[in-house]
Image (cartoon, rainbow, N blue to C red; front, side, top):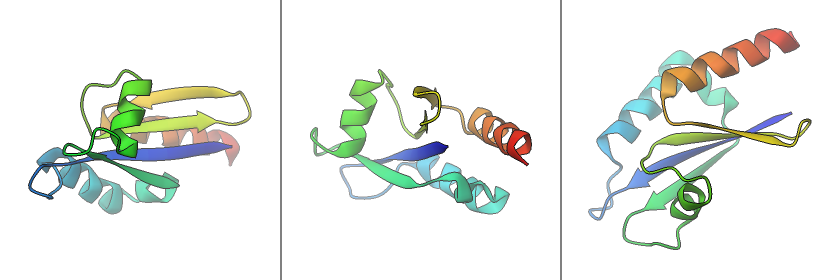
Length: 97
């Protein structure tokens, strides 16, 4: 089973970053939001926020990004490009179907 976390960045103003808004819209438009089990916020004004901690843990320097935990193989995949994430999830689901 794959558990997917979407990490998006919240700016000092309280608004989402432009790229995060774009990726969120693509997730909805493409129907890939169904793959997301959890959304974590990387709050620029809070270094202890979940998203910031996940970025540090996985050595990711920018948001948005996706963390795919495969519980069957105990592996983790990181995607910082939406289209790579989308292609990976679509291929994974075709293999299951």
